[in-house]
Image 1: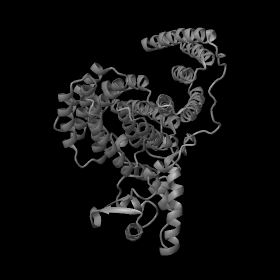
Image 2: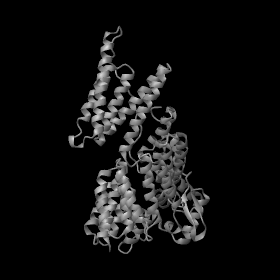
Image 3: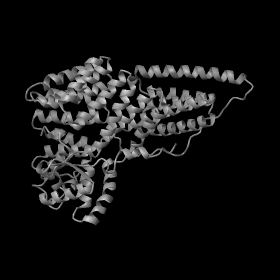
Image 4: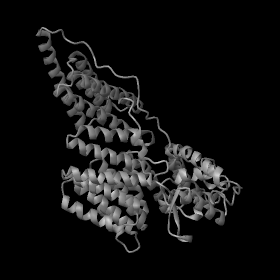
Length: 523
């Protein structure tokens, strides 16, 4: 039961299938095709386990509301405090995954309190709570939770993985607070603790890159983040790949290499349909618009006015789409930042009247935030907008006294939009794989294109064994033969031999990196 939140995707699906098999006729159904959304609780022996597994499967498919509902159902019938603690932990982790850290913290603290002597669960909840505080900027509190996790996980019965994850958390806190030597020491300990865990190594590599960036060694940071991007693509970890592109862009920005910064931010935006948190997509639109504006100003300074005007229009187009996305999220803070960026674009081109109108609109937008939710940063942003308004009023006064007529124009924008409509990556990958597998089936025969495409699109970059493949509805010997065909056809790669062999979809089959070739509609 306690392992449910930490199972691999293929193991989660198999566990769910095995829970149902005694009560439902699934003999002719691939485990990867089972409708986990159906209400199987009417006849199963242990609905608590089934609901927790269902919530994990909903999470894998980004059906967040259904995932929360299943956990809540399980919590109602939990028969032990440890079972209740597990549901609290899973709820908190879902909120963390969605970026709702304030909502995650209370339920994770509850999980810690309910876990009792179950050290592994208590340590995991403390780590999750530490990361929630870390991303909220509460670094001393985050450090306390990571230290608590280290102490809890140091027992002989605990997993070294928990200690390594706790060290990663402490390294991140120390890097953010300028304690670089301590950060590096903890990060090295975390890195060497789990050398055979690819996902953990990817996280450590990302942390090394951040440490280099905090120390202003931007070239080293770029090198490390490029390694991150490569490994993330190998594992088909879209969030990690987008994060790496974002960090590379930020590092180039610090070096004032705006073309490179813009290129990598564009790569991150190209993957937007597959990104879980739409709020992060909108933030990238804001950064992209600000970067375009910098590039346009550079062109102005060098006298390339026609190119500058084109880039200003491109930047304004990004702002327009960003505002449209903000409207769907009801995010007044981001809307105000987009309006301020648009005002600066108009101001840069001498459209002072329009810029002043946009600044006043941004101020009114910030005032829509309820008083009890306003922060010091909101007040600082409002003061900055008021100062920008005063500057624009002075510029308008000067312009009215000049011989040139004052401009009432505004910067235009294109009608084209970057495609950010959310798409489940598994469905996208399934469609790509199916065409390849049908071609192999027409040449070699025997394999089941639909079942195999569904399985591979779900497990994606994870390693799996022969036993996992048998759950597509084939016997062990048949699975071995089919896996051999898929390896020979270049679809799968293999490590090990016989029963110890593990397989994975090859990174160069329907690769994530091909997104680099996707042009921007604004280019």
